[in-house]
Length: 344
Image 1 (cartoon, rainbow, N blue to C red):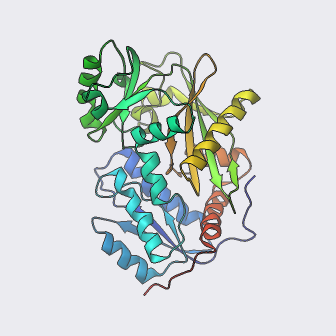
Image 2: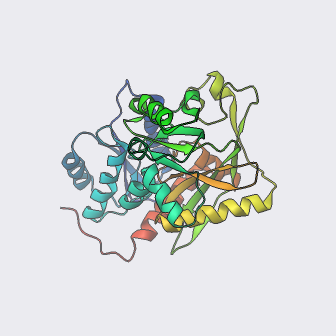
Image 3: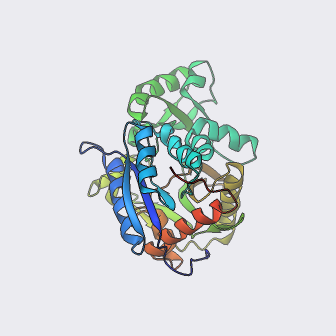
């Protein structure tokens, strides 16, 4: 169990999120839900919801004006690009503000699935073989087989659907498939050998010092009648009421202790190697052979009250408000020891 704050936080909290238009998809709209829920959870604090629009200097001005004690960072993208989400923590750091979640380097490293795979391979963390579009275009090819093609930089399963699991015989077939799918995936993608097995999520919560709290493992269950491959694609995540959404569910209570411990070891190894902090989620696919593959490291997982991270916290007796209080406390713990600059 994570260490819980002795009393609710009563200071000033800037809840920062990116700008979201009315036309944005449900994954982006979810940011608004998160911001509202966080402000509601921090009922004893003075919260201000601050938007990161086109201008980073404008955000700096808003932060200086509000002068928060801590920033609750919900920025998942900037200027339409997920990779630019790292500018937000970089700014908080420059201003000397404590902030929730991961630092900019971890967001960049884990957010580039091609780079993350290379780092995991070099660190002995099992992940499916794969390459990015550029590597495949230059002649790289792990061999014939079934691949899952997913966005290299975007999260939230953007562009992922039932057509993204493909069987190919040649490098030419794979590169053609990737080029066709890339535009819907933010312009770049990776192809990984598809692990046709069970899928799990592990939520990790930082604490004082180097302590990391492991929340209960969740398994994603798929209806056998689900159309296409059993993956948590965009519609299954975000199109509430759709057949794909209805065909997937989350379950706790996994009884296989060896499997749980294997995922915990891999998850904590990811935490150390990528320098994660605050909170993160590691996703796994487990092959029929029992091999545990890390398929994604999410340094910025969704914090909506009905999302997996909050569900894992609730599973171990933490309600949503407690979880949010812990994240704020962790940011302040992490900040302690560094000199505070006064906002001017």
